[in-house]
Image 1 (cartoon, helix red, strand yellow):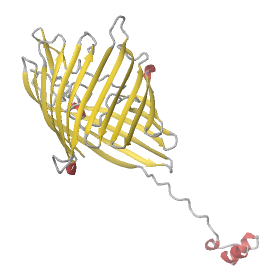
Image 2 (tube, rainbow, N blue to C red; image 1 turned 45 degrees about the horizontal axis):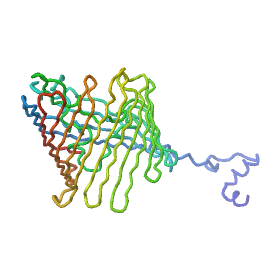
Image 3 (cartoon, rainbow, N blue to C red; image 1 turned 180 degrees about the vertical axis):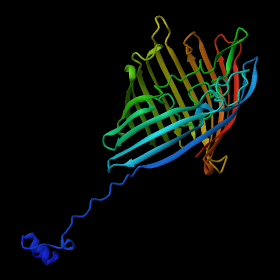
Length: 378
């Protein structure tokens, strides 16, 4: 009490005991609450990926100037803020901006106008991600909105550094090229080569556990009863880095073509640069008597820093085998190819080359495709 009385003015003391009136300057006022500051930050980033693609189906041959859909042109806005020591939150908007996408090109279609329609940049601007999320270090992460389902990317685990040139999809970024059958242009590479990956990007709610010794589990659900679950692993061991994923998805009433799918992939990168990647999947069809679809993919690669002072150089050869991939017909689709990717780290760029031969049961001839291109990230 003695120290308090020293702090208060005499008039204030009299006021406290009802014996007088204090001046405003003598009355203690509790300190104002700290201002509520919005700690959310915003990061803008993106990439542009352009390539020159040559395609030949035994009858038609053409050069295309295209956007490589293996890792297409896009831009994104990412907001992130810290609520407390345990919880962060954020939001992501990501848009695709592909002109003359390698998925949309066609032989004899006068491609490259940048307009709409087959061969003319039909992809245009499109939504990829639009979500909000809350992440707890101790409890895991909840994501709500348009974004990756739990199983998305589980057929595509790949430590080779070759993904921009060729990965488990099989078509090698040449999905728009067409086979000929019976002398006429027929189905595309993309219709006959797929890695039966997870549920892609959808409007969903997703939960991811925290990582435990390199393992992380995820599950998500979207409208119509579609749901999926995945288990991922990534860790560094003596002399090697290992990454793997496996997933299951059920389509509920949403898909008219398949009821469930199981898929996965694994990749090992040794410290000496040698690497191997494998992926496989099987899908049950809904139509009575329809064959299940399946594929497997294998890649052997090598990474080195000795070729260029600017970044890592990656080489790889791969093989794809698909069984009854196209929904309307049965038959095998196979491909094999070679690629090289050079990173230019000081400018966030990558230059690449890939060549691939694609074979389809019932086609008049194989499709040969080759491209060279560059992706610049910012």
